[in-house]
Amino acid sequence: MNNELIKVQTNEQGDQLVSARELYKGLGIKERFSLWIARYKDMYVEGVDFTSVGLPTVVNNGAVRTLQD
Image (cartoon, rainbow, N blue to C red; front, top):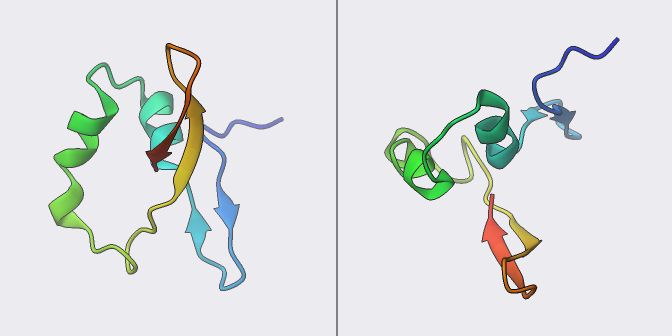
C-alpha cells in the first residue's frame, strides 16, 4: 500500500526530491501557486536547497507553456 502524500524521488547522490507543485497540490493550498511559493523563496538557496526545472503545461487556450517547478 502506498500512503505517500506526493511522489518522492531519490537522485544519484541519495538526495530525496519532490516537486513543489505536487507538494502544493497535495497540501490542498487554496491560493495561487505563484503567491504561495513566493512567500518561501527567500528561505532557500537555488542550487543548494532546490533546483528549478521547466515543465511543459497545457493552458486554458490549449497552448503549451513552460511553468517553473
